[in-house]
Image (cartoon, rainbow, N blue to C red; front, side, top):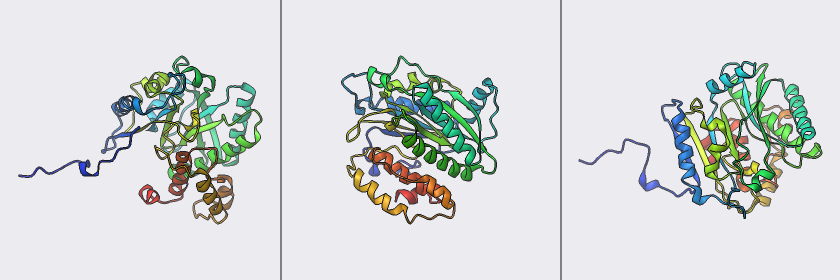
Length: 316
């Protein structure tokens, strides 16, 4: 009698996606084992990751997990502020410049725009890291990494996600063009009520020892997406490590200028029932010629998904 395949895995549809992996509990239950299994998988893909002349400086590695609400609530209580219920706040991972005056100007702009869009800053948390882990090349450009927690006076869940999307684009664009001394160092790896991203210019075996959170057994998720980067048509840096906000992707599209130009031509006719005209204006530009193929693909995937399409529809 032929054995019936009871899993979602179909060997005939196997494809090679070197450097990318995902682990998930399909019943939605959150465990620390999912995160540790994903990092184990990531470390076993070190052969795919690139390094510079200094073999300790990786091209980039990272992990995306679901918002670990219980863990964050406990950590924030130690800092004397209380998080609202899940879905009623957003958490952002922030890469700040190391120069204090520039960092505080970036923070001031972020808080100003947050207030303008109806957000309240609940508090900040400095993400604990081991500064001895990155190689010498990565260490020279290592950012200050913090988490910011934001609530909104009117929005929750998907409405909140859209407003966080606007805030991230709006503040990143303004700071990138107007804060002197920033030099592109300010970056928001993730700003969401749903997910968080831990990443950096690291080798795969450096991610877990670098971020102490990833060593904490109270950190839980029902899914984990990992990526090991081999930089090709862009130089390695902290913000181009993956995963991005929606995808982990091996680039090699090599049409950055064409894709960015084509998207720019569409921006003039963009309309949405979910974003006001003012919010749409704050989102532009969607893509960036200074970013990698994968980063620009992710930006468009995110734009279409938060605009109301399903992720499978967007990927088609």
